[in-house]
Length: 220
Ligand SMILES: C[S@@+](CC[C@H](N)C(=O)[O-])C[C@H]1O[C@@H](n2cnc3c(N)ncnc32)[C@H](O)[C@@H]1O
Image (cartoon, rainbow, N blue to C red; front, side):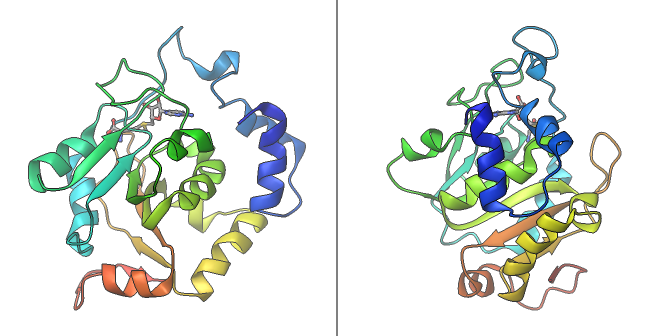
């Protein structure tokens, strides 16, 4: 997505009173920006832990999942977990920086063309993008998935959302398409994070979430 497209995309996907400052902050995190790399060729990457990933798989059925994608794979923790515990699932990894792990692809995951090259949507996208690009990454990934996206987000992404994000999420909430998996072990950086799951429709949500969970997770 080119710089001028970022603003149009945000205004279309999350209509609202976008402040120039916010759009500029998001644009700065696009790969063509000088500040994208910490040092030349090396991005910032805070890895996930198996404990965080386990919480997600505690609550979802995986029988219908054949192809999963992690488009922001970093060190590859999510694919490692899936390969170790569910070897029948095929997982495709991508990270624009290949210095953290060994991704299958090194493309810009904020571009539709990354997803389109596979010819059909992934069953699920499970990933932990940079928090700063979530407002772009979430709508893009939702376009290219068959069942659901599960995104590792800081709790404040939901509890302290700006108005247009609230409106965007409310559409899904109304239709019972959002499920939140909380109580994750602390992320490496010490923040409280949750898995924000957005289903393509409410029936998929109902079928995907295990029954009789005694935890503190919920459809919102
Ligand atoms: C939070 S880290 C991923 C953590 C990963 N789950 C792990 O356990 O290592 C986010 C990753 O997104 C990558 N990234 C940032 N912007 C990207 C983009 N536009 N396209 C693809 N990857 C990107 C970064 O290089 C970084 O490795």
